Amino acid sequence: MCHNGGTYDGIKCICLDQFYGPSCESMVDNVEVDNLCHNGGTYDGVKCICLDQFYGPSCESVVDRVEVGGKVNTTVIVNLRITNMNYTSVLSQTGSHEYYEFIKNFKLEMQVFYKDLPGYKDVIVISLSQGSVYVKHEVIVEAEYNENESVIKQYEEILQKVNQVLENFRNNNCTSESNGSKLCIDVDNSELTAVFPKSEKDRCNEVVQSGFQEHFQPIVVNNSLICVSSCSPNSKSYLNCHDGTCQLQKVTGAHCLCPKTETYVYTSQGCQGKILKAGLYGGIGAGIAALVIFIFTLSFFMFRKHQKKHTLFKDDDKSWYEDYDDEWSVERGITNLSEAVYEDYQQRFRPALENVDTTTQVKIQRPEVLKK
Image (tube, rainbow, N blue to C red; front, top):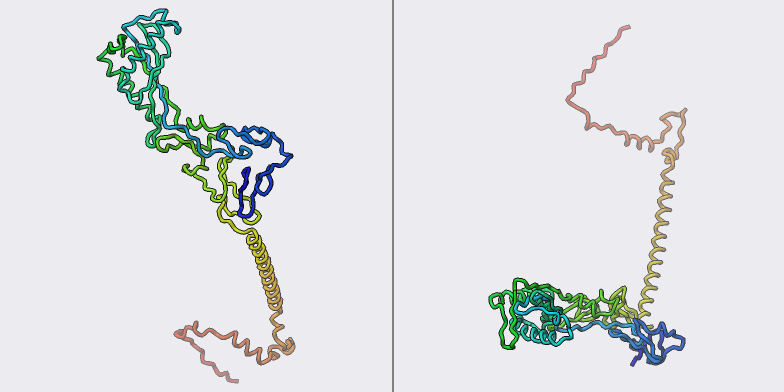
């Protein structure tokens, strides 16, 4: 329904920046060609021609998986000393007939020599040198990507097996004469050199486009190596974008592109929680209104409380003598107190008889009568 990378929101097509129309079928006229195609894509006048692993109208998207394969050739370098032949200057000439015949016979004999080596495929002669004849060659052994064992671990086992082949030949110094080219080998003076293969991660870094390697991780599925990004469902860190599209960026890695619509808005980065924009904006407006009312009400009650407290303090500031209507007069003395005031003070100054020790003897001197 929607062309050129457009997405349908349930009502209409949402087009990319450089396209327009009901189905995003038209392209704007003022787009600069240099900025139209991304990730190394080229514009042919009609559309963008993308590099491998990129796609989309502007080559803006990266594939979420790159398949490497199930087999890998490993190499062990062996330098064998052939004792029943002498090195001549003719063997140094790689184009000579003698050199050609020697290499052909050597490869045939090595098929027998390495026949018990699992995964053996071929030998490639690197060089010939003096010392009777030293033949430096690569032994090609095929390994298979495995979910339970890394290719590095498999190669360590291959090294042990190649070394075991040499040890087994120690008692049988010469190959068979079935090809008429028997070779006698000095095992003690032969050398073995390891050439470790690239790990699964290094292999992915080799095949994935430059700038995106860190966002791809290797996995093995059905004995086949696959490099996947977080946009792939096969990835352990799969980013599920639900209604949106997962896109990979060089710097930020995988992220979700949610459909841009005028009707809905998504509440999560995974393009979930689709809600109506009208309801969202209405809810926000209602929330703001409720907050304003709450603040106004709280301010009003705080103001009333402050006013009431101020009035209370003002009343308490009255002098104690202002509580009574009767006037005091020094001339009239204590007798000028009203009965109500007198009773009030009488109640305030009651003796605490419970603190009096009644066992204490009190001696009162008998009064004397004075005679005139």
